[in-house]
Image (cartoon, rainbow, N blue to C red):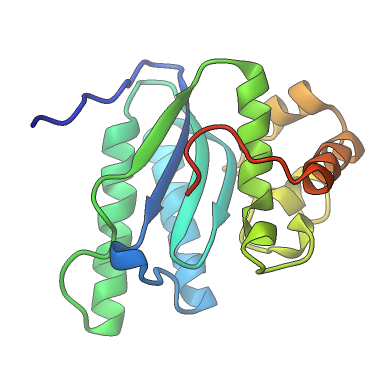
Length: 188
């Protein structure tokens, strides 16, 4: 059975994630995470993406991106294959680092977009990696609330436009933590 073609409309917003093969860890050290972030920056720049939110977990990552040229597939191939080659070389491994293709969901409404941002930010809290989302250094959330400087390749203007000030963004996250509501879309 043929795969369903991806919706690669220019200007579209996508929640994207990729998981390690057999749920294996894809970041062993912080050096791995730094190298992934450097490659993510190159991807954002080279493919003219706008990165609105991200979170690196232990065995997967989440991105919220919009693509100027509808090239999500090409950018994800660059990101995943580049990182997998580096990871395998570093650890003397062979074969697939990532499970299958990346998963993506096109975001149609602003309401869905802000809930995806909350889902991404709260992922490490729900996984027990930190108590609060600003406690996870490998997420865009600390930058969104002004706890750390934002990397140059992160676009916070959309989040600020939708939710307001860093304090309002923090309140929105706190509401999500208090509600314990499941997030829309596929949970990964």
